[in-house]
Picture (cartoon, rainbow, N blue to C red):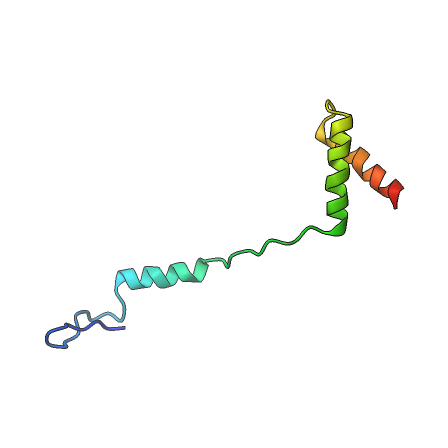
Length: 78
């Protein structure tokens, strides 16, 4: 898009766009849309509640062991 002099109206550049304008359009091509956060599923809500219970019962267990226990407990509670 040519730019014009505010006084006389002549074109200021022979190029179609300036360097700044090119950069702006190039940036827009690579911008990603904002991600929408998904709401937790029913399983996820039950899992988090059960995980907290298990963590309180067994404070020294590592995450892997706690998550296995939690998953087993949820399968049993169906």
